[in-house]
Amino acid sequence: MTDASTARFPAASLALAMVIAGTVGAFATESGLHPVAVVFWRCVFGAIFLFLWCLLRGYLPDRTLSPSRLALAALAGVCMVLSWTAFFAGFAMTSIATTTIIYHIQPFFVVLIGVVFLKERISLDQLLWMLGAFLGVVLASGLVFAHGHDDANWAPGIALTLGGAMLYAVTTILAKGLGQQRAEITVLCQTLVGVVMLAPFAGIGQHIAPASWGWLLGIGVLHTGIAYVLMNSAFRA
Image 1 (cartoon, rainbow, N blue to C red):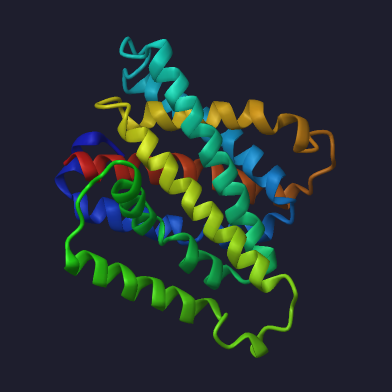
Image 2 (image 1 turned 90 degrees about the horizontal axis):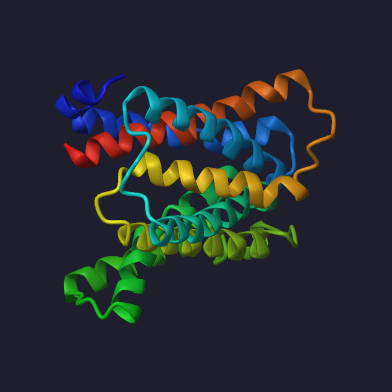
């Protein structure tokens, strides 16, 4: 997997990244760990992969990194880690399908944040498409037919997932402030923040079944390393 090959086929790279991202729910659930622990190990393995990738590709050391850029990347990292934790917690409280659908309305939150806080303009067509998308999410979430979900965790799980989607949107907005900094460097900084941030709460000393390590390694390498490299390559092409 090289920059040249992914740049030649950006659509294929993006499609592959989306396919990989779509399996994260199964990996998180099969690991059998608490969401905080899953996110911690995701950050550990993701940071290792991204560090080696950036080092081998010659992206490190990055002389564009400044204290202000590091601070912004760290703040985005805090939001991203909290977003991932809420996302994984939503799987146990609702379902993988429902949580995934709701979480991926993040782009609409990005637009809303831009309109409310950054004074960006939005057309009537965009507004109507957003309203339609939110209606679709409400219907897909099962809230309209609440009698079909007697579990008391269902509605809180949806609210938690919406909060995670909002936090990811904030992460996206903050990342825009980093200008032309490579996305791999940004995500590397964010995963390192996650390691430090979650280490006291991840139960590092607890026993983890051998089979769980494979799922955790997959989340870190596939969903945090390879998927981000593919997406970044596609967007730059």
